[in-house]
Image (cartoon, rainbow, N blue to C red; front, side, top):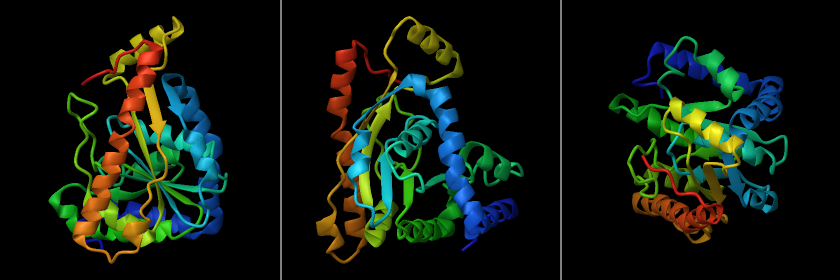
Length: 274
């Protein structure tokens, strides 16, 4: 289970897991995410983002877990998606955000950073190097078991890593492990396409100045309808099936791009690149 992980990573993982095994502390994370982290994100990022159709979350079934699948261009993507989703889901919902181990779980200050920016909800860590292969298989089981709970929402990027290409509309291939997680948990899956965050800190100032002059928000986030995986759920799991499910998620995210383009055109803005 912990093959390939460093001592610091093992310690931080055990600390987060132990935290959520204690009901009062786990509830504290739920409250902290909604009433501390969310207002902070809205204040610092909300002025840059315009969201569309997130109210669809209000009509979803509550009898199983929920996965919000967004493309990944910026480190801020999941923060925006989570903060917006909280306004449309029951307040007792626990939010789970898998995150890179680098700079968080592999650092001595990782727990403090997790508490400050994620209310201890950034978990499990993702190790992308070869040393994390065995741990990656365990991550699938962790997310599957979490999604078996009714009030859990997982924010995840099907692409697995941040897309650094010049074209924001050319997505990276989806990871088949996500298909396995969905099949084994039978969670509800909702696609999201967003992009437009500045690519450097220097550009944030120019975006802020433009917003003060009345320019529209640079980030457009569009939520689609839940993906119907009923046929796949009725079929025995296999690597081919899991791969197809992951590819379908990417296709559903891509299907939102024309609407995002139309919104930008109606606002008189162009899609940022790079």
